[in-house]
Length: 183
Image 1 (cartoon, rainbow, N blue to C red):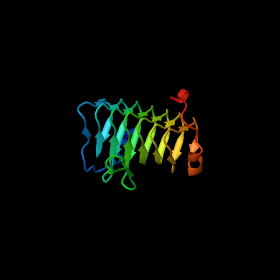
Image 2 (cartoon, rainbow, N blue to C red; image 1 turned 30 degrees about the horizontal axis):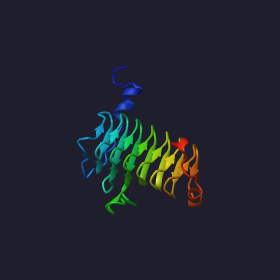
Image 3 (cartoon, one colour; image 1 turned 135 degrees about the horizontal axis):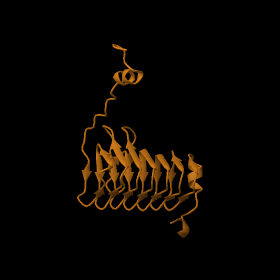
Image 4 (cartoon, rainbow, N blue to C red; image 1 turned 90 degrees about the vertical axis):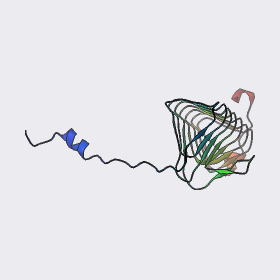
């Protein structure tokens, strides 16, 4: 069969490369942060002192977007933080705008997705496989596993139950306070 290619080589020859995003900024990582070599940190990202980024974690910001990972904040394996240009959230201490802000001492658990615009206050916990999109979580909130938090502002110290789909402000205002067993 001279002159004929196999189906697999023909498919390979026709593959088109996907262009990468153009990133305007380089990450700023504190010397005391622990960023694993098998994580992806790309774009205008600021990782503050004592923060931990586990293997298999991706924190990306396209051009015009930015992310802050606060002091001693932990991003566990498989977390995805994605910032795109557009609406932003305000950091309370400096009044600066960011696409995603992850507060000091917050923990984002395995395989969670945080997509801009998103603000997670200090001392929050986001449970396994939860999704936060276009939301603001006050200080000390707990989001248990497999929850969707979208288009809402959660008052400080509230608990989102496992499996919840939280997408109206009325639902967010009715959430129970965090109990010791939630912590």
